Length: 157
Image 1: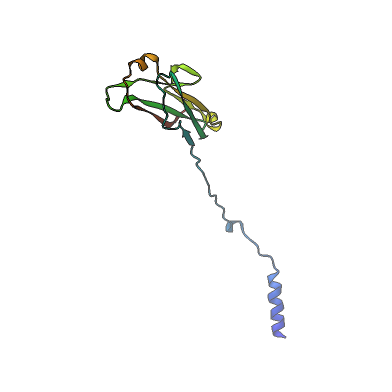
Image 2: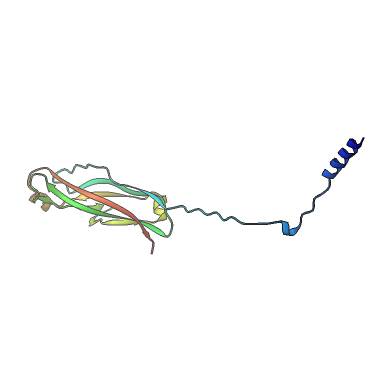
């Protein structure tokens, strides 16, 4: 009987509410952050590209930049050309211009893409332009040149 009474007392004590005090409660905050960097892909015209002799304008292909860019930044694309050079006689060169196909009268030296341009994957159609006097001065032979495209993220000022 004593065990039954003791058992009932223990069960009843489990039903009693426990009082908490304000000084027993502690609260803290953990701050979480994330940094999403700008990312992009520059796609350049395919290589190699054969230029037919005595052709004024040769389509090179598309240059595009696509990505997720911070609105306070720009993608700057620049070019460096190495003129067509005769593979047997490096003193013989054929100068050329790189032009945006929409404006073949002005040499294209680079451009910038903003965040909206990158989201839309803005593309430029580029061409190689060689004038007839340059063709007329060229000696027979195999010529090789190059165009180096360089891109970087800069501040949008």
